[in-house]
Length: 356
Image (cartoon, rainbow, N blue to C red):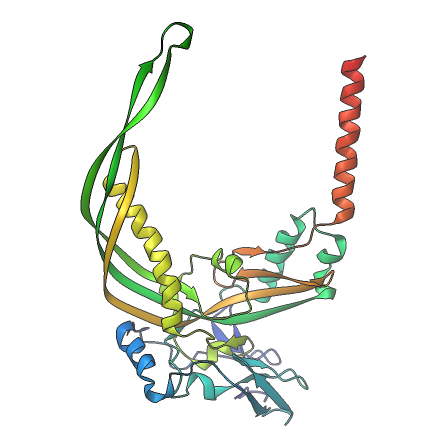
């Protein structure tokens, strides 16, 4: 699928600056089709996972297998899609191409919404320049990423989860007290803790807890891009993807919920410790009932810089909605050596001054 311009026959691209499809050749702009007046609807998680377990609609196998060849409507060139990539550019004429059979396939969970790019390429490059420029230990070659790296916009697949969690707990509350012990020169104060058994109930509500459903991205740096403004997500339209890479999910909604639950449990334990109170807390048992479990399958925007340096790939991510930047970079051995030498010189000077 491509998006031909009705004015000049060129290719329309989604423009983050004005949230419209725009032709880079003649400037023609048009609104996104089907996005207005609709809401992104939450889906029932238990029903979806039951469907996955039963294998209904062949959803028991969620990963994309094999290859798919797509013919470019502009030049006739053939592009091969592999893995979870669903949108790319024609290698012959650079026309954006979308693979429609994945997001619309009956054996895949449908995309519920898209968080459109708010950060355009100009702003993204400025953000990455500032980020790399502030990494003063990075080697000079790494900072020339424009010539050596790959910089692309990509929609990553996410599942978001809502839950109403009711937890009953048992544990102990510790109350500190200060006592004086010893005598004479050995007289001192010590802190001792009195423990009391407690039990209670806490309630935690989770809204749009986001979990990345793609592999191949550094999970820690991607997690640092949060929070995502998911409340601004629009109902799915392929128009938002025009001109940007896009991936479908590698891990399904049930697999991602395992990570979501782990993060929820961390929040729940914090709530329990606050409820226990005192100076110290010991949590012995948690029994959580997750109610009203729902999810959304969203496409969230990132700018991804990949630079190969010293035989290793370094990834830097920009949140395509907020501009938040996180990533990896190599350290320059020459710069580190210079710092060490400078520190040794300073130490030598100080020794000479105080010795004299």
